[in-house]
Length: 432
Ligand code: GLY
Ligand code: MN
Ligand code: MN
Image (cartoon, rainbow, N blue to C red; front, side, top):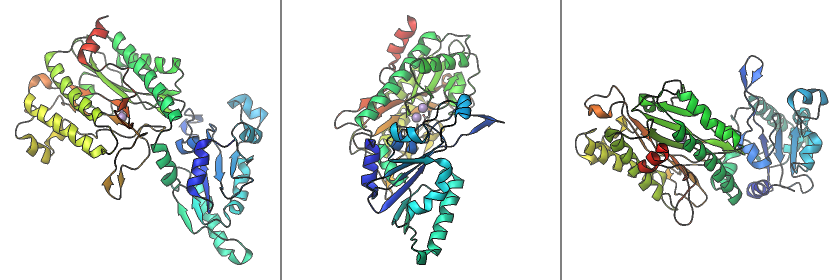
């Protein structure tokens, strides 16, 4: 039984092709300790196989053995330390490979497998320099051995050109997993709102959120959680998370769960004491207005650039209204003055990777959204504590609101909708 994603991939690359897709590699954390292993997203998408030191070789023209997995062989001694391996047997019986070999045999077998095909699909420069070198060396030798019956591929094509286009459009099964990832993250955000109190540390909130991720079966946060109180919220990639929560400050949390490979990515900003001040509310409602208008635009035929432009318009007009900027909004947009307070993109694709694959531009034209894509929508306004010529009441305020939105045939579906974002909803939740 070949996974549907793999069957579709084989159809797309066609019979003149072979694809070689390696797993991720273990990454050293310090000395002889590794980070927890996380599979390469492309490899996982095609194979579902979760071990390191593996390579998938896919040859649609080979009717007997179109799908070969090279894997770590069983090894009772090593398995005592590092846990069970599927091994060569399991690669076939559990993962549907039509042939399987120990990874040590990849080097000697790969040239014969490539021989005679026109197109080699391989993503060069993707963190596997040894396999890159091996493939280049084998192709060089094949070119020299033409008279002995070897024939090297004529084209080497990035596997991503096919897999990433597939990954961009989510199947119903993937959407279900992404909904679960978003639900788990939303629960974490709700629990953080309920628990936050002046005097706590940002890392206590981080721990609480990640506790809820894990207790619901998420493998890990999908990226390093950002828990920034007060002016820390104006540092876009703040991850120290070690300051004390102060009465009267806002708390910005950007945290998402990874559930069975799939990411969620949610940002909420709320008052630590449960009540927004007037100034906080002014900025918050402006970001929310932009965010909700942009979520509504996540529909087939619209481009990410158009949505981004709308967020710039709404937020720039609001900045003028609030006195953060002075002048004509159209001119301020043209001169990119809004970038002092809104300096990042509107959003990104979401899937197995938090910044998911798929092209944003096709032939230099912004790409139109299609049903099955998932986008984040995450405008924000950040007023540095050192900003000049802005009303003092806004100094050090940072607000971002981020949802995960599925493009459908009709209205956008907000996967992360369970996390409240209306100021009144948040205040009501926090007053309980
Ligand atoms: N948390 C990463 C991002 O929002 O893009
Ligand atoms: Mn994001
Ligand atoms: Mn985020």
